[in-house]
Length: 241
Image (cartoon, rainbow, N blue to C red; front, side, top):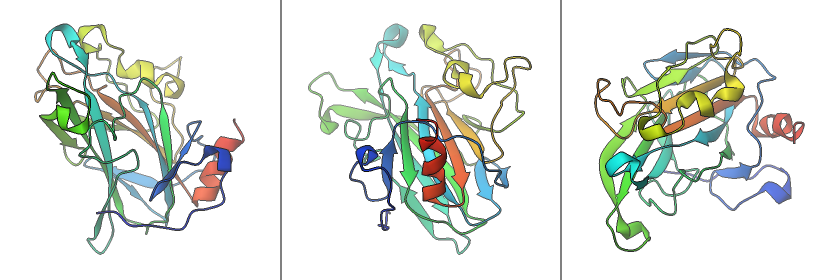
């Protein structure tokens, strides 16, 4: 379920029509400390918050030796303190693999045009899709059966500052999670170098077991940045354009 909010005054050249978000050109930066905890795969901010979400990268193929690029769709799930859950489709329809595909080869950032109550719980859900061999419409792609939510799930990891990176090679010579996270890894320690307002979600969407040779946690790599307001989050990114 989605809902509509008023649009903030953000650079017109960066706007794309959307119910809940705008597309921006650079990932958010970590300049303003913002307290949160990670509880069983959910980010739980301590204060009222805004957020933006950046797909840093995806690498998932289907078929022999990686085959062709699978489609990937993404949904942001916000469970509010009263138990109400908002499912945000910032990158296109979650059930439309062509229109909502995030496996594009380039980072995509969405600024959420809403404020959320403190103690809301933020989880992410990703889904991979396989081609049926015909055309390239939404109806020509089938759900592989790999839909993963970050909540209490061994096939999704949520990283924060100081965490050890997975150290897993990408399956079938694909890029590893570390490649997509490179700007957020300390070159000396090899650990995550994130702001206190940032977390990165790593998804496995190709296999269902951590013991599989295809388990590489880089099928979707997604950065979430928290802030005091959408305008403040946009300002930190704009300063680095």
